Amino acid sequence: RDYFNTVQVVTFDTPEDLYAGLKAGKIDAAFGDGMRFAFWLGGSDAAGCCRFAGGPYLAPEYLGSGMAIATRAGDPALAGAFDYALQEISIKGT
Image (cartoon, rainbow, N blue to C red):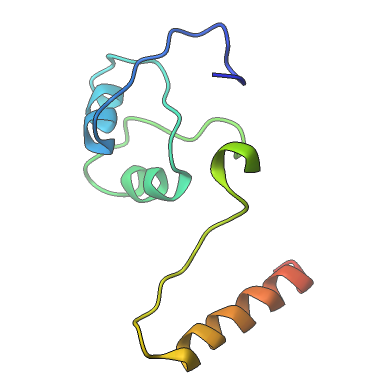
């Protein structure tokens, strides 16, 4: 709402309800989790109805500082491997 203060905001109970509203043309645009949108847009449920517009909105004050990866309990080696890989990506930018 801070970024788009001139639009009429419509809320949905679930992401699936949001996708259905977007696909049916009940709303003009949607703001939500980019990862979930990517899977939906790339899948058959979207049926090519929609696309990403513009780039990501990265606002740590609303969305946190980044993504999290959960690993199975009791596997510190796996968690460490993810930590290392993410650190390398952060350093190298790739």
